[in-house]
Image (cartoon, rainbow, N blue to C red):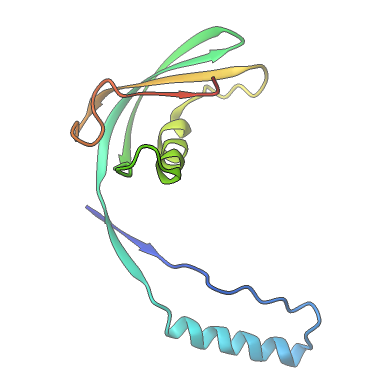
Amino acid sequence: MVEKLTMEVVETIDVTNETESGISQIKAGLRQQMNHAEFRLEDVELIDVTLDIDNYYDGEPIQTIVNATIPAPPEDQDSDEYQDWEQDYVFEHTGTGRTDGDSCYFVTVTKSSRPDLIPVGTEYEFGT
């Protein structure tokens, strides 16, 4: 388990029309708020996976195999949070550095240290 520290910003202040003195007062108030800020520690389970990736560029496949350690996915696979997780932790391992032409990626999990959370054989598609 790894602990993750999360802090949310709750306020944006427009200082466009503030004087230098006014900005100093705002900064002092923000410092005081930071002293009383609530921090939340979360346990994040990390999973070792092997990803078999078929990277297609203009219809031509290039296969890569990646060993990665990624956080456990959210439970609800239909949620926006799960879609974000796919983009942040699976899609980031696709590609071979090409920046031109059409591309799509097919990812298959071939090993998982927690097959109950990320089963072997799970498939992801990007750019299709």
